[in-house]
Image 1 (spheres, rainbow, N blue to C red):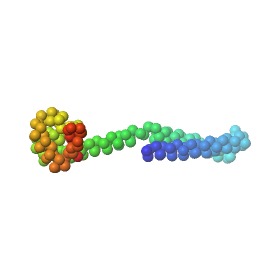
Image 2: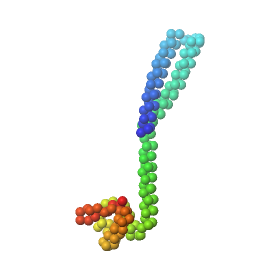
Image 3: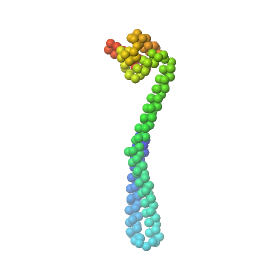
Image 4: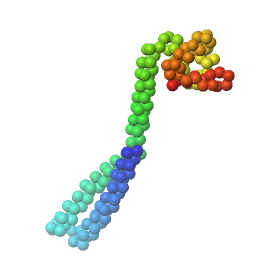
Length: 165
């Protein structure tokens, strides 16, 4: 968003300066015609040097216009890259957090927690099939995970849906 604002500012400044330069060049050309600058007297040299400076200024204005257009239309990629990096960082932190938590869990709890993380809102019946545990064992493991505040179970029809906390 900053690049868009900066691009608009550059474009506006460039257009204003461009209009001023065009007006200045018009005035200098009129003065040159009035002086009849065929021979090189003092007045003509001054007009010619002023015209040379305006040509340099046109180059500068062209650069500012190009920079403004770039910032306005083509610099969006930087914002996208920054957002993606931020998402990846959050994902990495969640993965690191999960790795730390899973060190304190037994194998059954790890298996259940991984299944719940991979499919949020999974029903206990589906979870039982995915983990290969008996109903009793799964119920016991889920109670332990709830006590440790790692999951939440909510009623979903006749069964319970399991969500990571």
